[in-house]
Structures are given as C-alpha cells and as structure tokens.
Length: 207
Image (cartoon, rainbow, N blue to C red):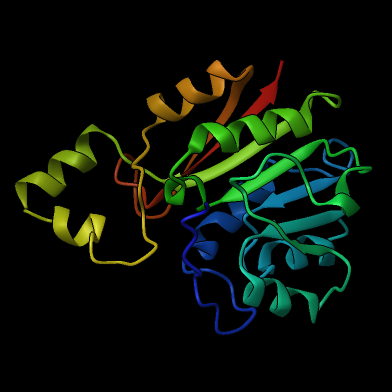
C-alpha cells in the first residue's frame, strides 16, 4: 500500500525552488541528446509544460490526481496518474523509448528510493539514457551550520505531513545510482552559495 500524501497543488505555478533549478537544469539538456523526456513525480506539470514550450518532447507522471488534472488543462495527453512505488509505467507510455528522465525534489519524499531508482533503470535500460535528479543539498559545512545554530528542527520539518523522509548527500545519492548501473557525469549546486546550496542536481548516465 502506498503511503502517498498529496501535495495539495493550488494551481500550475512552479514549485518554490524552480527559479533556482531552471538555469542549471536547462544547461544539462539539449534537444538532440534529450529527444524524449519523462518527468517522474511531475506534480502539477509545470516543468513538463515549460519543456514543451521550449520545444522538447516531454511527458509526466505523478501520484497526485489533482496535480495531474491541473497539468492536463495546459497540455492534454502528456500527463498520467501513476504511483511511483509501483514498477513499470502507465500503459500509454510503455511504447515510448525515453532517453532522459528528470525528477526534481521527489526522491527525498520516498520511503523506498531503491524501487524508484530501479524504475529509472528499467525505463532507461534500452536507450542507455540519462537521469537528472534534484534533491535538497546536504554536506559537511551546511550540516555543521545547522547544528551550531540549532536549526535542524526548522530544516527537517518533522511536523510537515508528507514532507521529507530522506536527506541526501552527493555521496549517498551517487552510491545508490552506482548500485543500479548509473555513472554520475555532472553536478550542479543550486541556490545560495557554495556548500550551503539550497538544492543540488546530479546527472547520471546508464552504463
């Protein structure tokens, strides 16, 4: 049984970190190498609709029925309700060969990130494609700052229903990717300043 908690999207507006992700994310994409994109955990579809407007061929799936309903109003036929804890893709997408998966600010919300990475691996196995993941950044200096100034309660927000379950570093995210046949090819720190980044993007290629 999925423990999914809906994010309660009010409209098609971008998530709060999109302005930090936009430029570094787009620097990792080009239309030739990324001709067919799947956004796993697309929420209200803002990123997919943004990519479609830029000329990319993109689709999105998410467990949020209200989120997908919002997304569908802008680009019908590009979005599907699907629980990311379930293996495989929705039937309409099984015939599409994706060479890029994007997943922004999702993996930290998942009880079973291994199942999620296996899904990414299975989708990209034929195309030997690329996976681009963003998740809140954690590293020594940022963690030390949070400890010294007693900011952990605010940072991890344990009272947030449906909030963050996992807290990833470059090391741990690289490890789970390597274990599933991916090789990290790029890193971007996003927001604030070096080593205190708000979030991070890791790009990996299936070997």
